[in-house]
Amino acid sequence: MESGEQSVVLPSSTLSSLSLSLHPLPILNISEHLTRRRLQTSTSLPFVLGALLGTQNGREVEIVNTFEVAVEPGDSKVDHGSFNVRKEQYKQVFPSLEFIGWYTVASHPTSRHIALHEQFSAYCSTPLLLILQPTDTLGANVTPGHLPLKAYEPTIEIRDRSSRSVYIEAPFTERIAVDTTARGGEGGTSLESHLQTQRAAVKMLHDRILVLVNYVKAVLSGMDSAPKDHATIRSLAALVASLPASDSQGFREEFETEYVDVQLTAYLSTLTKSTSILNDIVDKHNILHSSGKEERPGNFLSSRRRGMHGRGFGSDWDRMH
Image 1 (cartoon, rainbow, N blue to C red):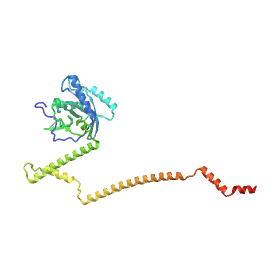
Image 2: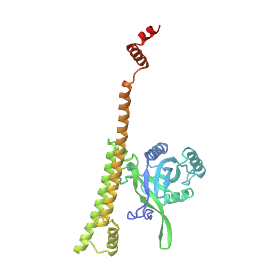
Image 3: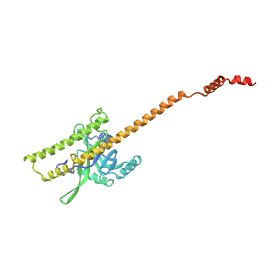
Image 4: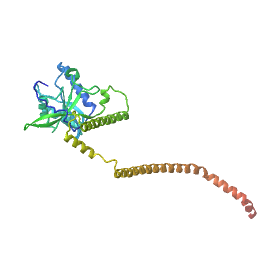
């Protein structure tokens, strides 16, 4: 950030409620775009600009694909004619994808990005900003094992009766097949990855609950390091009151009733399946054993002939003649 320039990113205490998912294809496209521009311009940090394509359902956003955006010569203005043509071409091939934002290469958003944001606002009310932070040139502080990518959601800040466009950092809630790439392709099953994700979520929840518990203990003990904040205490009380009363008798009875119903349904399903299998076995057994007892037509006629000769049919015929 230039000296004296006002930051266009709100503090980290302001959180975005976006649920952002990132596919690996946009990462490869942006990296290839940056590498090609470096070779073309012979500079370590060329100007890179592109569009993000994906889907949005409420506050759930999924970044699926990208394409490059041309700018007017000698300026940072978007070539809207070329942009519309490319957008329509991708719309014909990927009809389910919409323009949801744009990407560039920088260490952090600046006023220049706000000007670009206003140009893209004609195509999307709140275009996201995805920034690639190459550590080799920018020296960005990137957590080991994570890719140097950050997403920002635009918003309006009102201060001193004036408003301005600013950004809020939006963390990635899911990076599809990206974490494995960042770790160098370490092995592991999908179950293992799911369990590790659940473990990390539980650990984060435990750490945050522990912070709240320590704060309450410090307030009760009268420590100076934890001043009594009535608003925070009321928020904690409301949070505790919103939790289900799992120790009440009514909850236990309702839980046991639901548990018994689920078990009965499972037992009934297993019993029906076992009865069907047993019925199939009985049918096959009957078919197998009944086929051996059936007599052939030739054997039936020969036995009839032997019976007639045994009763003296031939001698009676001779006596009649």
